[in-house]
Image (cartoon, rainbow, N blue to C red; front, top):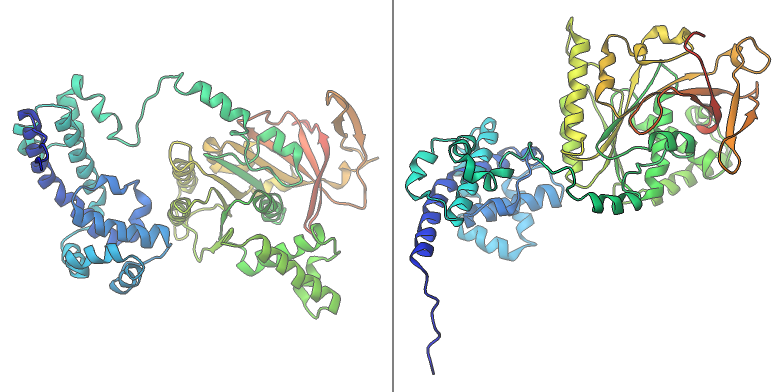
Length: 498
């Protein structure tokens, strides 16, 4: 029987393999340090976009894969020896390698000398050597430079070989990428045709949805009003039903209302809007239910449980609000596939007392934007906030109603402000609002809408809108705050001089 022919490697290929082995000797330290830090501080998973392909040493690939499976796939919070052991019972192949590589003692040894604050530096080191491996495979003369490269940053290596390394180092800095303006433009047209740019619609608010484009990925929507104007109720009533209808997932971060309050409000909404059972908030709050009321509340709870299986709606009540905490949760849940978020309510970080608090709030909003924007996590967040107290006597709302912190609006894609319709804005009063709907074949025929004195209405000011008109008109909605029923009735034009 003839022997199998062996593939002969060229001198260049042999040298490349030997050089790659030496590079991996430099790279293994960064891999070990990164994995050790991830076991020491699992939250770091949500501060990088590392993948299994970033690792070359099989020991650290195995330990990284175990950690990834526990934290990201199974959504656990810790990486102790017991948790790892339980996970490996379900993964015998990984367990065999884990045993071969020294089990948890290997991690304990590695964690003993790493500083979690150096995580970013180790990631940069790992990516640098990963790029040098690519250089080696591409035939760049790196064999005799490895010792020097160990003392250089990726940027310094890039600058040294700028003419040759543009292609290889194009993605080293994951925060900076360049594109030709026409890259993928035809594919974009097809995606737009399929509704790619349409955001989550505001439930039962077609005019607001059409003008703003809904809650779009990569953007911030601000919802402002004075205290007790119904900001949280509007956020719930216009977002949660759409989440359920579209079978999406949402994380809601709250720092004023409690979980029980949100549950009560949703029960009221479901009774009135889904079950068509007339019930007011005070009836749910005060207890001592009649049999039919109690039965309907349980029916509403059953409906919510059925519609929101598999953690569709997750609530996180903050004991003390800090923007860093909210960003941490956004990163964590975005990694789990959540695309929609609510922050109720945005305010100054707890414990901070500063003469420049408005500047710090502005920076906090910038920090949130840097996390949710399309180039980062590409998710949407709806943020409620409170207008300055003087707004209670104002008729026309602008960015100035935010007060000194008005620049928080700069990074938002949409800013909506709400107020109640005032007593003298009802029909036959001095400042009666002229409300109308646009109907007809071309949607240009004005049909008058008469407000009912016995009902309560609110005015929605679209103060900023990157997807349409801003303050060209205002939307008027009937809002029964006692029953959590809200629906648009028409539009109006309020002049700044009024």
